Length: 330
Image (tube, rainbow, N blue to C red; front, top):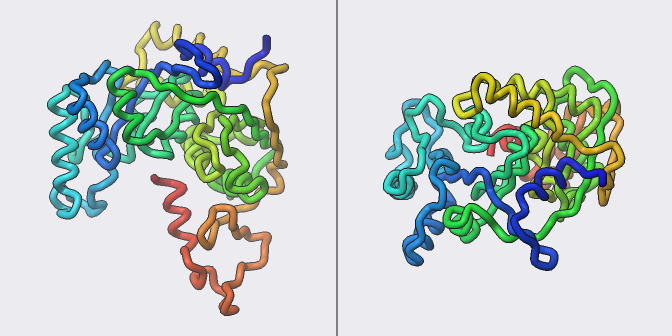
C-alpha cells in the first residue's frame, strides 16, 4: 500500500496502538534550560531514571544573555535556572552543550549541526519550533514539560496520530525569495490554522531547490501554520549536509545509512488527507506585521496602514524586524 513520508517514519516507530493513539518510540530527546526543570522534578518525585542518556542531548540556550562574552551569570534573573539545569543534566550523565562550547547555539540548530538528528528519526524537545529538524527528513516536534518527563523515563510517548497534509510549491522562485517567504506565503494563503492537526510535508521543485538551512527555516515556521510537524523528504543536499558531522555515521556505515534514507519519500500514489499548492512565481519577498504571521507585507503589495493612518510599518504593534528575527531563530 502506498505510504507518505510521514507514515513511513511514524509507523516504523509505533510500538502499539490503542484506539486513535499510538505509542511512538523516540530516537532523540533534546533538552534546554527553559522547560526541562519541571520534568526533572517529576523524575525525582517518582524515582525514575533517564532511559537512554546516549539518545539525549541538552543545550543551554533559552534563558541566557546574547551579549558577546556572556556567561551563565550575565543574565542574573535566570542564572539560578541555568545553574540548576546544568546540575540536573550533569548528575544524570546527559551530554551537555553549554556556554563556552564552540557548538553552542539554538537547540534546533545545534541538533542539525551535530548530526544528532538523521533522516527517518523521531525527535522531541520542550519547544514548539522543534519542527525545524523536519528539514532533515525526520519527525520532530515540541512537547510540554510533563511529556518531557515521560520521554526521558520511557523513550516513548502516547500520541494521537496526526492527519497528513502536503504543501506543494512548484516553479522557479524569485532570487530574493527565501524559505521564510515561502512559509509566510503559505500561512497568509491558507491561514495560521491551515495545518492544525496535521503533519505537513513540503514538496515540489521549489522546495527541493532550497538549501538545507532554508528548509530548516521553512519547517521552523510550521508551528505558525498550526502544525506541530513539518518535514521535507531527504535528498542529496541533506546527505551532503550531514556527512562528516560529529554524530553521524562514518565511512561505510554512512553509505549504508544513506542507501536506506533514499527510500524516505512519499510514494507516488500515497494518499494525503489534505493537499495545498502554490505557484513559486507568485511568491515575493515579504515580512509579517501586526500580531499574526498571517498578516504579511510584500514588495508587490501596498504598504499596510495602521488605524491612525500612519503609513509606516513601524506604526503597527509589532515591528516586522521582530518577526524576521523569530523566523530565523527560536
